Amino acid sequence: MTSQFEPIRRLPNMQDIGPKELAARDVASITLRGVFGLRGYNRAETPILEHTELYIRKSGGALSSRLYGFSEPGGLEVSLRPEFTSAILRLAADSGQMTEPIRAMYDGPVFRYANPENEDGSKTRQFSQLGAELIGAPAPSADGEVIAMALEGLNAIGLGGARVVIGHVGVVVSALTEFNLSERAKLFLINNIARLKNNQLEEVLEEAVSLGFISDAVVDDAQAEVDRERIASTIKQVMVEGIGVQIGKNTGVRTPEDIIARLARKMSQADNPSDFKRALEMLSKLSRVSGPTAQALSASAKVLSAAGVSESLISNLSEVIKSAEIEGVPKDRMSVDFGIARGIAYYTGMLFDIYVDDDQGETLGGGGRYDGLTRALGYDRDVPSLGFAYNLDSVIEARGEVDDWKDDIVVVSLSDEGSISSAVKKARELRASGKRAAINFQYLKTSSEGQGG
Image (tube, rainbow, N blue to C red):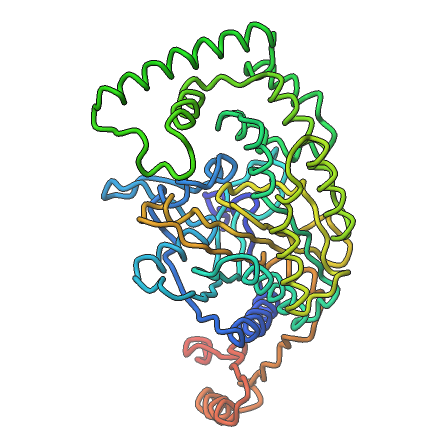
């Protein structure tokens, strides 16, 4: 009889996973946990469902727009986790144990919505991550540990040719700071690194003009100067009259005049078009610097120097690479790319992607340093931290067919055993000896079928 209902199909881009695939995942997970465990990492588990705010405080628009978020019956705004880092950091902060470095590893499903028209819309909306976080350890030595561990794990499961491509958000941000730009302007430029890397400078320029970053430089400079002078005068008057603030205390090496000028500049949000253009040109060149570590470091230093920016900004990245080499990572398995773009905006320093051999079409995962995330999550101090995660599904696919799973079930036939009780007894004996056994009920006759008519 035909059902009156339409079949309920699987959601688009979700996946059903069978026993063979699950067995391969289990073997890989156990192996990877063993590698991480030898370095002192302990397993941690966080809820699949969290406050939405946990993921949007400093995650950036790209990830925020892909949350599976909703209001729970109690009225809280919640989301399925799109990644583990924020939750692991929350767990560590709430534990009150961040006086010493915490090494945590985790694995489980994560959820990111994708429309078919998205760049990765054909990928599954649910996938498995396995990763680790090193909380409370400063750069650069800790960075080298995490990079090395990411490759060690892949070595252990048979992907010995994997390599890492390293970038550095801190270098980019520090370089842009040299141009006296507003936070809005810097954010615009950082968000367009991928487009600049892909030689889309003209498109970025057009958008910058439409947003008012570039226009008539004479008019903009004059207006910006008027705005800054007016705001600076107001700030100075308020401070001199003593409304709760004293000039000259807790200012470090900056003079009160420097502080007033800087605050006025930030409040006016007026960017010098000439400075903006120079910053854009510098970032366009820097974003296209990539290749073997030594050559890329040299090329990036030249780009910074030509733009009037100190070459010393790349020293931290150089030390990160050296620390990875000390950890045993071969030079030919590392390269540098200043055009690495992330959909998660909490990175503050080194970041990296993991690839199979020289194929940069599909990443196996990645990570980086996020020193400012604890304060963004509402805690009272910044804690130097970093971590990474594999896309476990991509790792299993790259690993290829392996003999991790065999359908070795012994089928006990009723016709061979003569009765259901004998078949059950036989199956029990097999299981007691460590074998998998199941009864084939196909030949079991009901009582009505056994009666004569």
